[in-house]
Length: 301
Image 1 (tube, rainbow, N blue to C red):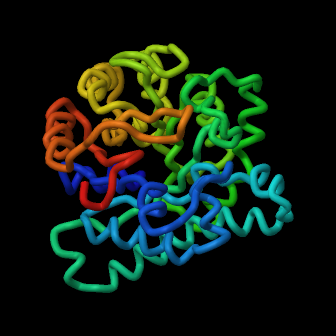
Image 2 (tube, helix red, strand yellow):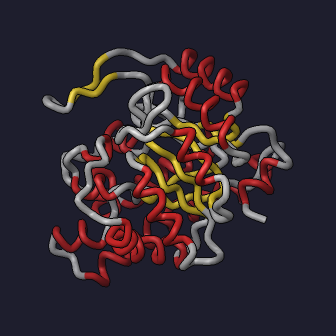
């Protein structure tokens, strides 16, 4: 049995963590780099471990690793060797495992909750490009080429002991199909598939979420289907659309609701934790069973 199904048989909902980059910046890290939060795997890994621990203490049942933008290609482009790059991929998983194990050693932390899971973040190909194409999906690659891109990093994450994979912020159905095909090469692996959406029904690239969810329903290694890094106002309808198309658990972890302006790299608007909690309750009522936050959310959320 996959770990998500097993836990959902015991608990009504699984709480995911929130943004990693937001917390790293709040703690003084400079992420103005194509590697984004993966840069801190090199510079200050102990801060990443602490952020994971703080999310567990805040109630997270799942930690998502600092590997969204971590790839061998990205690290070697910075001058690291292939061996060093693979070690950083594995380090991203170990940091979350170490935080989880430290948290779970305290008996008081075990009351009424599951032993937390570690999900290795498999960001989209567009995240490696660092040009915003993870919100467009206009890739020049075939499905086979996307499989080649993701293969090495997935092998490293699983080798390091990740409980499952978080294939997240996928803008297009083609990349989801490529990742599902790739999972067959790792028979013991499980993954959730989470898309970025542009409105109440469609992925950023334009495909209908319901059609993607229906196709994923037949894939045995896919343990949940949903959306992330999407405006909260779209999530209720997206949850209903996915729920009607699949028997898989629905995963949602939208951003805070603030608006990002790429031209000057700043966020606009406000998002209170109280409002986010009220929204999350609605997502649960609509059928979501794995709920957390993405950009601009914190342990307070």
